[in-house]
Structure formats: structure tokens, C-alpha cells
Amino acid sequence: MSSTNSPFALSGRVAAITGGNRGIGRSIALGMARAGAAIAVLSRNEEKNSQVLAELKAIGVPAIALHLDVTKRETLPGAIAAVEAALGGIDILVNNAGVVTVTGGILNESSEVWDTTLATHLDATFLLSKLASASMLKRKQGKIINLASMYSYFGAGMLPSYGAAKGGIVQLTKAMAVELAPHNIQVNALAPGWIATEMTAMARENPDFAEFNKMILARTPAARWGEADEMAGAAVFLASAAADFITGVTLPIDGGYSIC
Image (cartoon, rainbow, N blue to C red):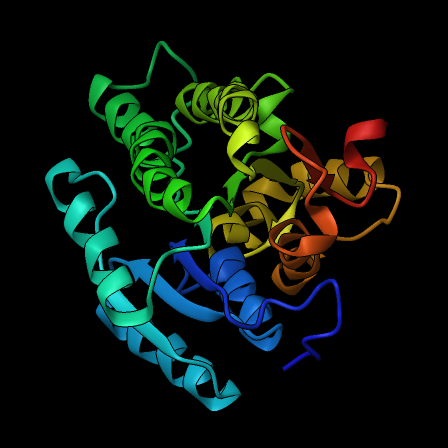
């Protein structure tokens, strides 16, 4: 764990990460743990929850992993309460849980896919942020980090619900940042580019997407896919005292994809 003298140290802080048992969420959870934070992982897959909990405990920080489906609104207050009962008040909330369905566009996309996608990304971010910020308000400090996407800005013709949800995340981040800044609560977002995770495996490994993969690599100045662990540093920074005067920002982590 990092020194408590570092402006990037998270010692004494409690971080809750939705979807924190795999991919980007797992990397952020482990990165914050290495910076000293106590960690609560809130995710659906019990097996993966157990795996990441073992990794967190090996780092040596207090940690719990709770089963949570963020689309089940009635369970969210209890989940926040359970984290605070086990670890203390939540100082850092990372709204990372996500799903994506490639439907081909609005002519093919069902209302069920639309509803589930927005409920997972946008609705859950709003509801969990509302709950966590009410708790942060009592302590006059807090950090909320939302997961946006390059599709927050670019047209997502093949997955319109995902693009709509991620576009909404950017505006919600700005709205919450303005509201909560007087209470010393900073709200920012991360916008990952093409990161190698289970969710993006099809684009990397399926021969039917070979040309698409070539386009990604050609457009990315770094000329490669990002790794999930490369998301952790930015998340730790935004969660730390080093970012106390940064709010309402959406930070791209994309190897330069968004500037081309």
C-alpha cells in the first residue's frame, strides 16, 4: 500500500465499486486497494466476487464483496447500508457496472434491451450516486467516479442504447459536479477507449470482426488495445486528494483514439 504522505494515497478511505469483480472494475478495485482504500465490490457473479475478494485480502486491506444487480432498484439502499455497516461511510463510489448488446441499430433493438441497458448504466449511476452522496454530505467530502465511453461522443449505430446511456453519463456527471461541489464532493468520469476485457473479446477475437479490429488499431495512435489495469491509475488519481479541485471532467483513456 502507498504511503499516507502521498497525495495519491487512499488510506482510511472506503471505496465501493459496482461491477468490480472483472475487467475494468476489478482493476480499479485492486488499484484503489493498493493505494490503501478499504474496498466493497458490488457485483452479480458470486464466483467472480469470491475471486476478487481473495485478491483484495491478499493486498491486506479490509474488503467485502456483495451480490448486487444494479437494475433491482429496491435493493440499492440496502447494499449501500451493508457497505457502510461493514466498512464505514463510503468516501468513493465508482459506478462501473455495465452491459452492452450489439443489436445493429434501432430498427433491430428491442425495448427490453433498451430498458436493461439504460437501467444498468444510467439509472443505476443516478440512484447509487444519490444514495452515496447523501452519506458523503454528512462528512463534507467524497468522490464519485462514473464510467463513460468514447461512445459518449461518437455515434454508436450498432448499439444505440449503449451510446445513449453513455452520453447521458457525461451530462449526469456534469450536473452532479455542479450540485455537489459546494459540499466538497467531486464528480468525474472516465471514458475508456478500446480496452481488452471480456466485453470486447468479440471485436478482438472473432474473425468476422477482423476488419473492424484493424480499423481500431489504425485509428489508435498507440496502435494497440488498452489493458484493464491501465484504467486503475486514473481512477486512483480522481479518488485522491490530488484531484480535489477537479470536478465535472470526463477523462479519456484511449491511447489517443478520440483525437484522431
